[in-house]
Image (cartoon, rainbow, N blue to C red; front, side):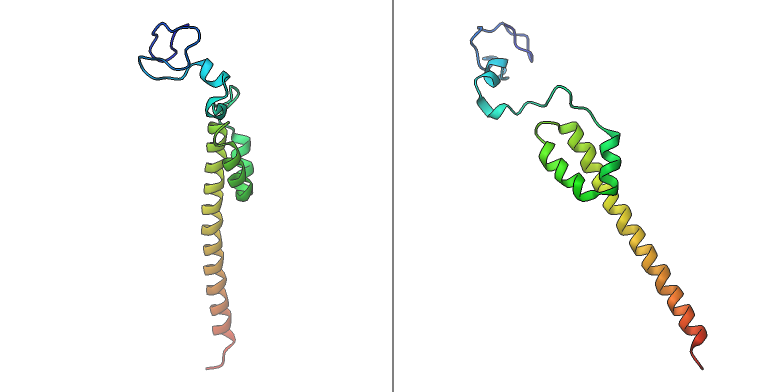
Length: 113
């Protein structure tokens, strides 16, 4: 067996590489570190980004659940949620300002001087 990081020849029972300290497949097979390797089918997802844009709380939950097993997909969810929250805040401020100006203008037209 060879180290996937440095290419050093390893004993077949080695858990870590003695040269670079990189864990081998035996490290994860023995149940060490809770097997926190990213899943092989992990990839950024535009669909989850859009979902999380419209429902930021879902994005936060998916980010927290997937951050260890699907880090790229979790990052997509987190970005979608953050962008969604920022857009919602900006639109809320704009609508509030426009409504306030319209109310003041309407009140100014109806108020006697």
